Image (cartoon, rainbow, N blue to C red; front, side, top):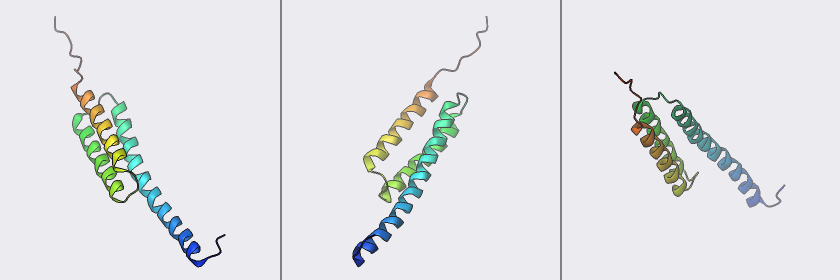
Length: 99
């Protein structure tokens, strides 16, 4: 237990900040997890994927604004999933051969 008054206050402040940061991390990580699950489904439509990507991008940007994660990590997360969605939407669908 800290002895000085300023150290006690610092301890309380750190606890509040930790709760704040954890709540933001949970929010953006759950959005990323939801997007991953949707990507795993092979029949996901591009419209749904783009909506979820937009949500992830928004939450990650807000987490950066709240100084929960670094902006480079945010850019890395956004570009990774944007590439995956682009690759999945460009895959040719197997059409039945009419012979």
